[in-house]
Length: 250
Ligand SMILES: Nc1ccn([C@@H]2O[C@H](COP(=O)(O)OP(=O)(O)OP(=O)(O)O)[C@@H](O)[C@H]2O)c(=O)n1
Ligand SMILES: C[C@](O)(CO)[C@H](O)COP(=O)(O)O
Image 1 (cartoon, rainbow, N blue to C red):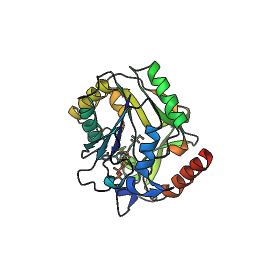
Image 2 (image 1 turned 60 degrees about the vertical axis):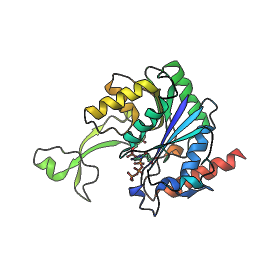
Image 3 (image 1 turned 135 degrees about the vertical axis):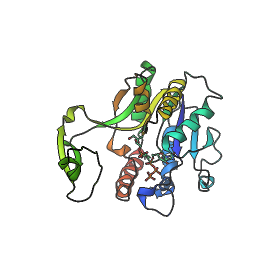
């Protein structure tokens, strides 16, 4: 098995002075925590790490010259970074190799969960699997007030205070929040991402690309520790989880 770590983002939503994957937390950068979590699984033989073309931070990582890591150039989107990494991997690994794609921005990956995920995929390689979090809150589908008033249903994330209204309440028993790693066969994932790009689909995770090929990826319960560090208020939370993990490991 191999892994891909997309780490070529700029972390715009984090509003930091450097890309968020290089922020220090619990003694290491977020990226180094993520790399260490992947390497802790002995079934992973190699990591293809996608870095921004102007990345000058990874050279200072304790993994900079690690024999199991091959750096590739990232792309303009997360999906493109993953495609570039897969293109490098296919040169040395067969197309039926299982590949785990894991966000550098999710440093709190427990080995137990990663191992459970790989066990599931080993039994279901054609469907693949991903860690995901079942939701415990009531889930609202929102539209922008003005659009709804005019009969439109433009889907907005945050139209500003007082401008999002409830369009409907979703049945939360069927709602899961996708996390990473997401694990599929190398050749299948390459084909799925290529098709998505041809169709102009805005792919935000590997499973959605695989679904367009008819795959039914298996959802494996993840953890709140596996939060994606995205905005400044995520830092205190991930610091808590990583510090707690370190204390429990002692
Ligand atoms: N062109 C890109 C964009 C993102 N990523 C990576 O994909 C993961 C998830 O993306 P996200 O959380 O959106 O990170 P950023 O794109 O850096 O964040 P932002 O959208 O706030 O800029 C991150 O590890 C990020 O480094 C990547 O490899 N290549
Ligand atoms: C892949 C992912 O982490 C699954 O939830 C998410 O889609 C990444 O989104 P981002 O906007 O690239 O952070």
